[in-house]
Image 1 (tube, rainbow, N blue to C red):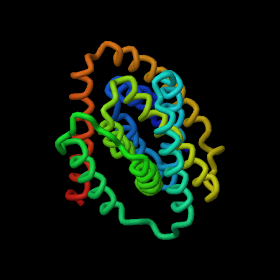
Image 2 (spheres, one colour; image 1 turned 90 degrees about the horizontal axis):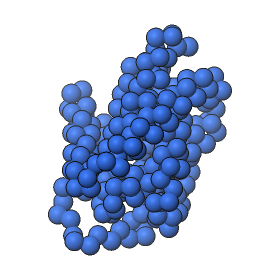
Image 3 (tube, one colour; image 1 turned 90 degrees about the vertical axis):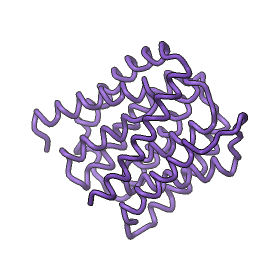
Image 4 (cartoon, rainbow, N blue to C red; image 1 turned 180 degrees about the horizontal axis):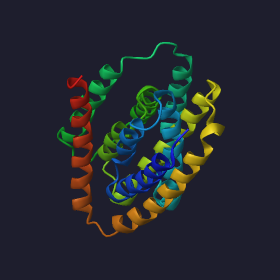
Length: 242
């Protein structure tokens, strides 16, 4: 199990990264994953990270619930459910580096490609994003940058962007918990760090949303765009550095 120092580090990190995600819109989940990877065993990392992120995103989705676009969320959830079902049947893990490189390239394309004045994301496109990102998240742990690139492409205002991202990720993490639970992961053995990290994340989310309301929309979009880009470049660097 965890030492007191490691537990404290995880709790603090959860609060800080939730603050970053709430204030900027993206980035905290991947950052937390990197920190947890240096502390937790590989077989524990993805399911525990998923539960902590569920708590963080669910809280953020609840706070911004009036800004959620429910038809989009329902379509995303249908696709995500199909992706989780397929993931539960896959016996051989996909090459992590291949997935990372594909995700990074897709993010850069979506974020930096010329954006039409009026962006329309098709219903089928939303279903496919839910399916693909949920499937990917089962193997690499963090599909947040990819979901964020999709949300950013929709052209919502800052609160609607945060609400859409938080609600989509919440549903995705619920599915992840269901899949890993069905495969036999003992979540009960890790309830204490999960609960404490969720509580710390809730505080970070509250503080971050206070800051979000003070950030001008144009500056928010710039920060959001560059944060996603840096995460994509980080994924590419991880592949090339091996």
